[in-house]
Length: 374
Image: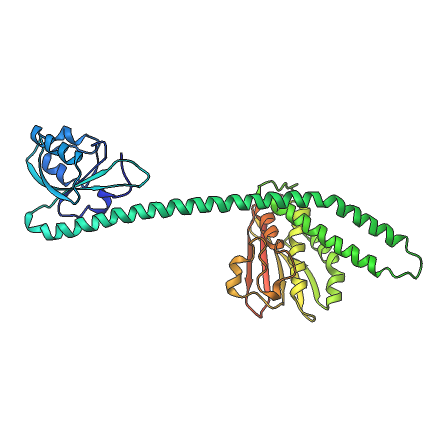
């Protein structure tokens, strides 16, 4: 039985004397090898009594039966070697574990006794430290397991609530459309339009929550096909044309001539690009620009969304793709799920997503999607 609490072989390899570790059952569980070299017998895994002469066996039994209050010196004669002057002390491996663990130490020479005494004390401190580390590790493991369980429960609740909310929201959307169509000529339709946009925002948040839940569960289904890139970018820019114009931001789309098709789920790639463009338009001030581009990079097509917004501080970059993370006040305005969904969609396609930004100098997001085989 090898214990991880004292580590004789690892910690006392260079100790000038011989060291044995003996389990509560009396079996030699570890050794730094020096006593074995003197005795000429393999010790680890064998009962200590089996290695001793008759007189020493009785002496060892007395020590084990009545453990000393402090380490004591004893002389043990081995059946296959000479008599050795040893120091015995007991270590309790763990308060929850019954039994004792014995360490027997022997200085190489009596003249080295002062060094031996110091190293013996250090060895006892090491055993205590290992016990404390084991306790802390177990406490951390328990706390981590509890935190992971809480996160799973939260995600399950979010997924259930989001799913159950979709039906009533869809009915509200249908009702607002009917009300808008039934307005009398000249009637003020602004309140209905505001309600319609609010419900659309809620519906998008719910879809994001469901997507995040699918991504976490590894259940995001992709309908892959060879899709042309240029028409995809044209549709994306058309989708955000009105929003860009209303904000006074220039929206541009450019597809390199050597870019043809990618193997991807068209709807999911469009969703990822839409999240990035929407973020860029939201953060870029009037007079700025958001540019969407596609270029070839070996077996991948690189899609990029660049804005001239305020940029992102360096200390926030590592957290951009965390769920529900919104950064500084200037970057708030959403639930903090959009970039997490982008990362999940890209990685589900076997690609990677990158971000480059400097505060005050804009931001560029890039991700790779495999090229379609010709």
